[in-house]
Length: 445
Ligand SMILES: Cc1cc2nc3c(=O)[nH]c(=O)nc-3n(C[C@H](O)[C@H](O)[C@H](O)COP(=O)(O)O)c2cc1C
Figure 1: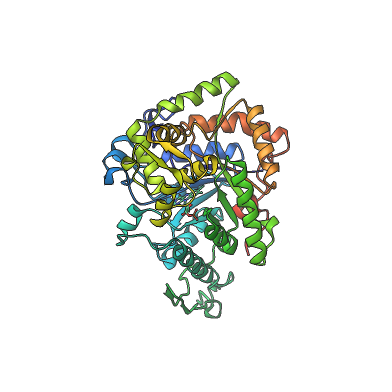
Figure 2: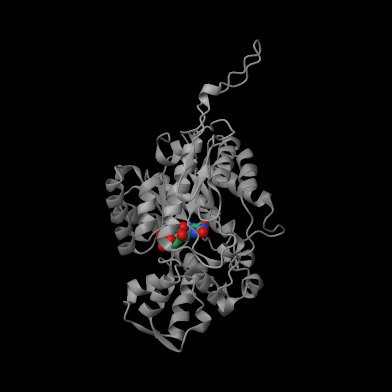
């Protein structure tokens, strides 16, 4: 069972003030993260993961004020320098970093990831996202989203260019002959001459190959087109966890697409997002879970949900049909896998729901209350083991949105991980030097 910690939101959505959160230091002090990395490595965690987005939530009432006021997915730094810092204090844990294939240039990202693979000693992963939010788009010169399918077409070309660039220099390119003074071997350096629909890149990368050759590739799209993109290139997939039917459908769709792409489904795991509260007693875990409901204001909830779905829920009428809102979200080319889709799955597209009911459901979703598995180490391990086996025992879990940082994650490391180890689900330590070795059990191709 693979285990990663998602550190995308260590301080936002009220976590900065939750019991168990850092005191006397505040985001983005990199020392908070180096400490976290050291303690996660002590627990043998496979990877620390950073999602990203460059917009400030501004879907709610068309303004970013509420996001700033309540700290909803704001502020966010580019975490690449922080990963470089964490790597200097650790030796085995891997790091996943997110960049957008819709707005960034593959040459820039390929070169940056090559350098990060060097500085981490072969422990970097790239999570490629298609970016489904207008506030991201606005920072790169767009006032509308590209069609959903086109974003994935772009993503596949983006990754293709990156992979060509990572392979454009052969491992033994450095000669470093002090007698002749010859430094490199030009026969080992190959321009790629890529001319595609979206990118034109001559190459080669002006760098030397990194320990893994390329980063481990992660992808999180969960629409049919997003899953096809995962099958095209992902080494590991990040999936929406917690809803068994949804998970089984995702796993089956991914397996189908992998076979169609000529790949072995046994090789591509899904890390299911999972929110956990682990405590010494079941009562204490449930008490902490209930306290999550008080972590956000009503305006904060609206801001969070509106941004995640790409729809301004401040405009909802007193009552409405779920499927109609879902259609509007899809027509806006925003995410098809958000909170509304989950409600539709549960209640049906024809269900009529009042505004108050919607926000009540949304409250439990946005605070993480609904998705959180809370219990003792034994109870949480039982649940994870059952989920793992029922979804094909490939991949594992991404512990996401912990209620407090570092408190909630320290409980996972200190209580849950030893229980998983006792059951033989987690190794006692690292046996591999690279992230590909640790996470995939094989070198990258
Ligand atoms: C578990 C999970 C994590 C994600 N993390 C990010 C992220 O950090 N940044 C981002 O821009 N999108 C993120 N996404 C969004 C996806 O990359 C994708 O753009 C979104 O799910 C819409 O595509 P889809 O319709 O194919 O699902 C995430 C999605 C999932 C399911």
